[in-house]
Length: 263
Picture 1 (cartoon, rainbow, N blue to C red):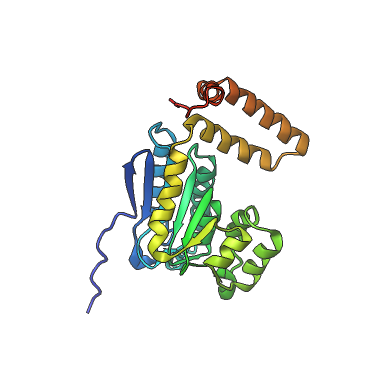
Picture 2: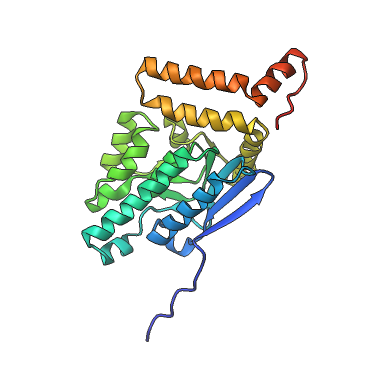
């Protein structure tokens, strides 16, 4: 008896409302693994969002019991050609970097488990809120695979010793621990996850779009620069911000003791 083919399901759903774009990983039966098709869908969606002036904030979530369990090991096992594996990991790296270079802030909305490249995805997002039942791990080491690419995002998000403990043990950490070590911003009750994420997204969406976009770019540019270069770049960004329409409006609003009216 042959197994019936899996129904075709879009790997990603996009929804836009009030300046907030929701991207939802939509392969719950596969635990939202980052296979080639899903990575391509995320890359395409992020490229479209980058050029969309109506989008102020992005929320990245998923359906089902897992945020994402990382790369699809069945896909990798079935296609062990070096060229395919290099192509897959290069596409994933482009997608992760596109989140960082995206003009808009990206908030991860995490439920269930986030492991390996799924944990990498959480670490890559600018902000993250998780349900208290969520769990995180870089568990490749349990299968003889050091999570080298997740380590890139993890080591740039949390302290080195916390990162290495996760990478060397593969142990799961709970949402409270993830918040304590800085992998996520907040752990909230499961029933409050949606409300908490969209409250944060709405708060950011009300700020100056110009300032948040310039600020995100400036923040990531200065991280790996020497201190003097970081201050030069940040000072140039602040001068640009002060002289931009939103900056001038903000100064006038402060002087007139009123709420600013951004474009």
